[in-house]
Image (tube, rainbow, N blue to C red; front, side, top):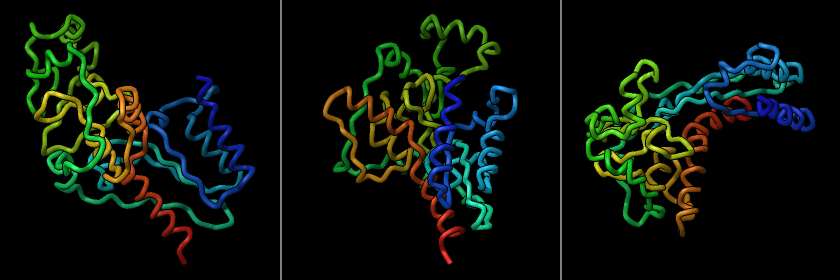
Length: 252
């Protein structure tokens, strides 16, 4: 839609400043998005930047491949000004480790701030006891489901068998945390407790350091913190790409 044209403002600024390097980040879905004339949107953006004097490289990266305790795919585009005569090479993935699993992520010292959570709805609380560690809404007995979910269960093929209320296990790497922080669209349920992850827990899943403090004085600020964290680029992924840019472009 028309919001897809916002990238032109980015191009305007790049053209005015002509930085040595720029980095764009967006959702994986941009790869399949179309420009108004039917062309691939990501290719249109890359071509526009080529015409402005940049060598552009883009790729979908999974944050879990760079030490982040979350399987989260994002499109990363890096452009290097042509006079530098370099083409960016994305960092090599590293093997997953047990430190990326929830068992380690949720082991948080009591003195770390923001260990508060946003209470779930009564409906959510009514079905959580039926979802085992590592399970989802599909484990809930049919007669315990809300009517809306019964309709989906009755026609799983039509609704593409969604994984509502995914409760990742302690020995799993968590799935993508979204800005809405709702159990119907992301795995935000604690593995063993019937509650939403705390602000600090989702911050750790997004690889924020423990000394990064979010406000939590009232419910409005608590819900706002979930949105801020869910919208963020995982710190570990940003760090991996930034270090590679520094190594390839700026270090002699």
